[in-house]
Every structure is written in structure tokens, then in C-alpha cells.
Image 1 (cartoon, rainbow, N blue to C red):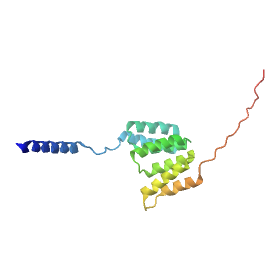
Image 2: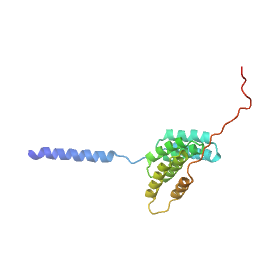
Image 3: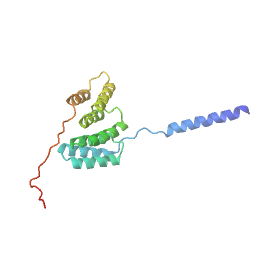
Length: 168
């Protein structure tokens, strides 16, 4: 009688563990519609139609928010349009899905340099070196060159109006 309650508890524990293990699913693949939209967005980016590429890639991300490549390409389009702040945010989204994505780390580092945050870009470079280990990675050379080049110099330009305003 004393062992019955222990045996029942052990049986329920094994049943619960077995059910929980069977109920777990692996990571499902990215939705095929999202991948088709990603391919279309890349083609539009290559053609130089950044506005349509942005719309298509945002739709791809909406269809499947786990599409890390869509976030990366969307960030690249943002960088091409001169929006490094938006690119940094999009690269961060891609890195939240895969923290070791070398393309996203390099892209975010380059966007950080464009924004003037060179020390944070150096953190990305160190992280890329850690992920690559002893193998040679082209991302290390590309980000190192971008850091060495430094942020772009932006100068303010004054424009003189063609006609002077009339005084009353």
C-alpha cells in the first residue's frame, strides 16, 4: 500500500514527460510564399527599383516573420537608399532570429559606421571573428575596411534663393 502512491506518481511523471517530448515540433521551414516574395524583392533590388523592392520585402516579412533573409535584404535596400538607422533596426531583427548570421553582422557594422558609431561596429567585428574562428571570412575583411574608412563626411550646404523676397 505504501508503494502504490509512489508508483502512481512515477507513472504519471513518465506519461507527462513522454507526451511533452512527442508534442514538440521542430522549426518549420519558412513559408514558400515568403520565399517567392523574397526572390521577387531581390530582383527588384538588382534592377534598382528600391521602392517596389521595399514593398515586396515587407510583404515577405509579413507573410512569414521568421524569414531572416528578407530582413537582411530589406536592410540592404535601406542602406542603398541612405537610411542607415532603419538598416540597423532591420539587421537587429535578422540577428534576433539568428545571432550568428555573418551577413547581418557585417551589414549592421557597416550601417553603424555610416551612422558614426564606430565603436559599436568594432563590437560587431569582434563578434564576426568569434563566429568565424580560425577560418577566413570575407566579412571580416569587408567590415575592417569599412571601419578603417570611417564614417562619411557630411557637410552642410547653403542654398541661395533665386529671387530675393520682397520687402513691404
